[in-house]
Amino acid sequence: MFFNNFSGLFSNDIAVDLGTANTLVYRKGVGIVIDEPSVVAISNINKKIIAVGYEAKKMIGKNPEEVQVIKPLKDGVIADFQVTELMLRNLILRAQRKKFLIKPRVIVCVPSGITEVEKRAVRDSAIHAGSREVYLVSEPVAAAIGADLPIHKPQGNLVMDIGGGTTEIAIISLSHIVVHTSIRVGGDKMDQDILNSLRKKNNIFIGLQTAENIKNSIGSAFPLENELKMEVRGRDIISGYPITIEIGSEEIREAISETVDSMIDAVKRLFEKTAPELAADIADRGIILTGGGALLKGLDKKISEAVDLPVHIMPSPLKCVVNGTGHILDNLEEFKEVLIKKIED
Image (cartoon, rainbow, N blue to C red; front, side, top):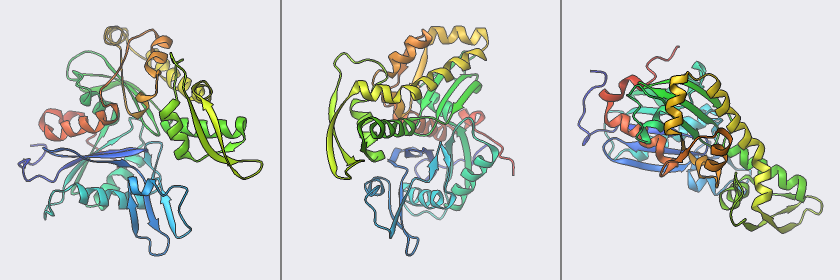
C-alpha cells in the first residue's frame, strides 16, 4: 500500500496549507482544526515562542525590542527555516487530539513553481517539527480538489489560486497539471501598494495591517455600483503627528491596479501555452477562483472582462486548498498520484 492503513479514529495525520498570510491545518477524519495567520512572536532574550497566529499578529508594529514578530514565509515559501520549524511544531502539537507515541504523517501544500531547494526546506521543517513522513502537493491541484472539480477526467480545469505571496494558475487534466504559471505576487503585494500610494499621495504613513484592512474594507478591482469611503489613521510624514484622513475605493483601486493587471497578464500568458482542446474546455467551464485574493471586490468581473471568459468564485475560497489537501489525506489511495513523490536530496 502507498500508505499504511490506520483507522481515522486513531490517526494523528494532518494536512497543512502553509501559506504566506495564513496557515490552515486539517486533521484526518475531523476537518479544519486550525486557521490562523502565519505569524510568530519570539522572545529576543531566550528565543522561545511567545505567541503564534492571531495573538502574534496583534503584536505587529507594537512590539518592544525584547519581542520579535516574524512572518516566516515569503512568496509562498520558507524565508526563515528555524521560525517555520517552531511554528509547525506548535501547530502539529495543537492539531493532535491526544499525545500519541506515533508521529503524524503530514501533507503540505506548496506553490507549483517551487524549486527543489524550497521543497527540501518544507520537508525538512515538517520532519524536524515532529512529522514521521512528509508528502507535498501542488496548491493548484489541492485547490481544484477542494473546489470539487473533476480532475481525474480527460478535460481541462483552470484554477487560479490567489494567496498572500503567490498567484498560482494551472490547467489540470487527468490528475496532473498540464500547463501552469506561478507569479510571486498576491494579497501582500496589494497591501504594500496601498501603503506606498498613501505615503506618496497623501503624506500619511500607515502599517501593513492597516493597509490590509483598507484592502478588505474598500479595495476593489472593478468599479463598484456604490463607491466606498473610510477613515484611515496614521502618522503625518511631514509633522510626525497622528492624523486621520478619508479615502475612497477609487483611490485604492488605482493603487492596486498594477498588481491586478500582472495577475491578468499571467492568465493571458498561460493561454498562449495551452493546447486548443484544453482551451475549448476552459471556454465551456470558465476560470475557478480560489484563495484569499478571490475575495477582492470585483476581481471576477475584472478578469472576465479582460479574457472574455466566465469566472467563478468558489464558496469559502480561503479554505479550498486545505479542504482539497484534507480530502487527499482522507482518500490517499484514490489521490496518491497527485502527490509530489520525489524530492531530490
